Image (tube, rainbow, N blue to C red; front, side, top):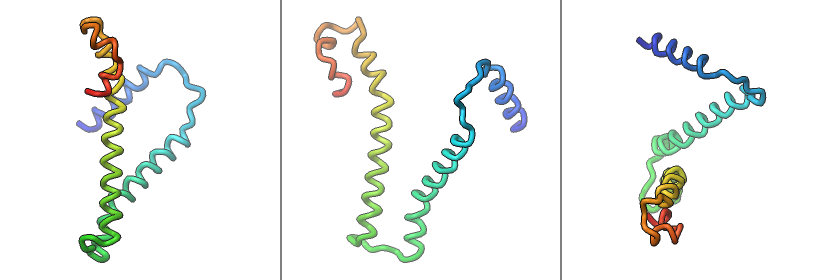
Length: 112
């Protein structure tokens, strides 16, 4: 079953790629994948390894660093979601179906 899925994926890739890309640098893209993999692994395994070496207590410096890291990661996820939803919200709030009050102030999309 898995082999059929890969074969189907390859067929669709070759069929859909009709134009040749001249500025495509495969080495940089593969390198970027490994960099993302390494930084993700570092972010996931650092707290686990730190806890295995010596468990931290509440209020310690290590607890503060890990808490700030969690807050930063949550902020990145929320900001990414907001950035990906904002263009569609702006488009929907400029719809001709809405009354003039909604269209006169363009920041409503950011509010909602």
